[in-house]
Length: 423
Image (tube, rainbow, N blue to C red; front, side, top):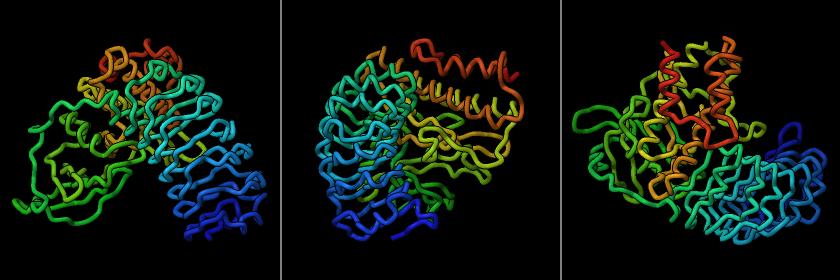
């Protein structure tokens, strides 16, 4: 058991088959309980004794249904049942206070009809389940900002989904509703894995590991992203690879060299990012939920902010011209150097739009626009120059964040608009 010094947080992974009764000694203190990677299948009826409990992680256990006792925990805001084999999500089993729900990699065939009761939900991960439809009541989840639905069995995407006023980050790839892959062979050459010598691990994310490799043919060094498994938090690694290849060829996207077939997965060979690049933002925190955080002391000038958002708008216009939505347009997925040259990365939540109707394609793109509006809003805070009132950046932010989805501008217009003001 790993108990924090102030006894507000605990992590316990020891092949537990029952909820550890020892934790009740701290029932009036614990806010965060992580019992991931155990063998639990139920929770005690006395769980509500944890009066301050805000976050409960039960990832990789053996739950088949969501225990109804959770509804009796009024402070609970975040719950994870990722990778449990859940088959049943009944009505009324969650507290109305829930804001962040992770149900990735389960066997759910439906969501409860009363899903709309959870009006404070901001972030919901449902990738890799067996959902065939969404309940109509979800229209009432008007706080929803991020929704992951990739790798399900949705045959249609409901129109009301795109009208949720705060939704900005959506993925629905690898569903029958939008599963249409034009051939992308010949866009990248295929290389044998034996051609590359692995040197060192550069980093890792939800969908794979990135290594520095050397080409044995000419001694040049590259980055190789090795996709892991068939499921990520956001969706499907195979879709990520396909969308990355499809949209390659923009100055703010990392150049791709080749595709490599490994024994049980695939990999992309990419240009090594030059030294000096680092993430523009930090991933959302438990408190910010769906919004990026920034390093302490981070500042930028208005001209630097303009340079950043112009590059983002140009890259996003390129993606949209190729009928792909990014679905994860965040500052933590952007790399910048000291001169604010930018690379946009992470296609793990990207969705190809080909199989959707024209109206749904436009509505989907408007979600990326809202995410761009959030980026403008967030970057305005550390900006050392006032951005408000009549400033074009302020006006653009307002236009991108308006609730009327059909009235938001598109990235082609935004790119032209920003280019004019950069001169």
